Every structure is written in structure tokens, then in C-alpha cells.
Image (tube, one colour):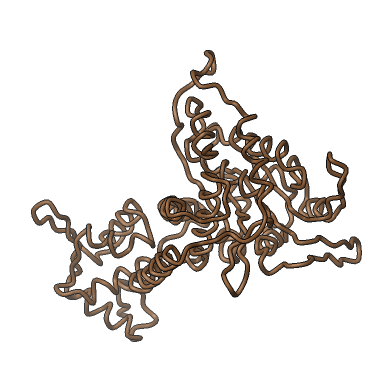
Length: 411
């Protein structure tokens, strides 16, 4: 059975966005696998735990996919500590470090946890250290053995902490919850942000669906998957493909001079591999990353870069200063000091979406830094000669006390 497609098919008549169901399937797979399987990256073992954050307006049915993942993991993986409801980060840590007796009478002393929160900000008590601690716990590869809390008030040890998290939020709560250190300190770089603004369909839930959900079928697959243990293989051919993609990806970032305050792009390779592993094992319960799994992971993860940007556009109300600077430098360096809208999007697609680039160029036009020209079906952005001269002096270190296009003082 194809677990991912089966879960999607069972819920295609419900309103929650399709991507929410897809990523809730990956979260379920991640929580069940925990640290039982890994990919050998030679410097470290990469485990398939992931953090997923649904970002959508209130009323966009974020809760149903989160609740489904919680139910599936609870009923299929007794060794995974499912943590939901309202808690503090200290309470979560203590739960992970407490020995438990599983239904079959065995003692579970491992710190494999699945944190589920249909609303992140209401489920976790505010604590300035919360996201920093979650950032540390994400890196299972650097936490082999044990993780200790040695506070004077509370001391305990967590064996092999492995955390998967599935949570949801909206713009208002994201603005409140994420501080600068979370944005730039690595938490969001480790999080797959799934941004949606449209329902999958319209359903009043007044009539029985044509394809009724069969959760027992999904649970049975996860139970089989939970039996897997050991190294996940990746063929030499697939490793070569990924190696080439990784080189091309880094070169593209360097050419575009991408400004990434979150650090997402620096961790993008591991994110892709984790998602490829989950997709592969979600399609077939075998310890191997497949071609289909890698291809699909690359496609799905490309969306994550734009999702982080859309989310961050509302957090901190950035004025796109770094992107404006990079675009102005590009115009100065280009022949004729002009660029087409199409070429601009090709060069800066990692830094901003097409809509965001239009907003940036409108701002530069309003400041007199560029003007627009229509040439056939193409829109060109042109920098006037006087502005080229002024900005060249500015970027070369002259006129440091004056911003571009700022009127000279005559007093």
C-alpha cells in the first residue's frame, strides 16, 4: 500500500488544504520511524525527524490533519511519546525523560517524541528558551546517547532524544510567537513551513463522502513500518545525482547573492534528504531511498523556500533592504543598466517571489532609482545615468553618510 497517496485519497473530499494532508502523512511517518532508521552521511547519521508548521488564516481547517497524525501515531507506535495539549518546554522535556511501560509490558526509556499542536502559541507556555531548546533537540545526530538538564530546580536525562513536531499557526500568532532569535537563530531553518490560503474543496459535511476514511488501513501500514531498523541505503547513481544537484544549488545561491536571514538554504540539503527518505518509505516499507522519492522531495521542498519567505514577510515587516541593494548592484553592472522583468525573476527567485519583486521595483521607481519601459511584450527596468553615477559612488564607499537618491544638503 502507498501510505501517502492512500491518506490523501481518504481525505480529498474534506476542506483542509491538500498539502496539509500530505505533510501530516510525512509527520506520521517521521514520528513512527524516530531514530530506528538513518542515512549514513559519513560525518554523521541523518535521522528522519522533521519539524512541520502549517501556516494559514484562522478557519482554514489546520486542526484536522494535525489531529489525524496524532491519532495514527498513538495507535501504531507505542514507543513514541505523543505530546499534545498545553504544556511548557520543561514539561515536554520531563515527559521525554520519564520511563514508561508500553502496552506489551516493556519499559520504554528512549526519548522519541511527537509534539502535536493544532495551534502552536496556545499549546506551549511562553518561554524565551522554548524555541532554542527545540532547535537543539532537532539535531538528533549531535545528541547521540543522552541529553541532560542540570538545572538546580530540576534535573533529569533524556536518552537519544528524537523529536518530530507538527504544529499550526496563523499570521497574527506567528508575529507574536517568533522573535528575532527564532528567525535568525536556526529554529525556522529546521522547520518545513507549509503555507496555504485556499481550501481543498467546499464541504458542509452534511453528506457522507464517497470514499470514507479507513484509518485502520493507515495504522496497519505504520505498524509494519515501525518494525524497520537500521541503515537506509541510497544507490551510487542516486548519490551522484544528489551530489550534482547540491553543487548546482550552492552555485545558484552564490550567483544570485541570496540573502537568507533564516539559514533555511544552508540546511536545505538535509531537509531534502529527510523528506526523500520519508516519501520512499511511505511508498514502500523498505530501507532504501528511491528515485521517485528523491525527485518528489526536490519538487516539494522547492515550495518551502517560498513558504518561509511568505511567512517572514509578515514577521518584522521587512522593507527588503538587502534585496533592493542586490538589485541596484545588478543594474549598475549590466550593459545599458537595464533588466527585463523575466530576467529579474530568474536571477532573484530565491530571494523573493514574483509579487515581492514587483513590490520592490515599484518602491525603487517611486524613489526615482529606476523607471519602467515597455518593449514589445516585455517590461524593462532601467536605471538613469545620474543614478548609476550616484550609486556607483555610494557602493564604492563614497558618500557614506548619504543614502541613495537622498537630496544633498546645501547649507
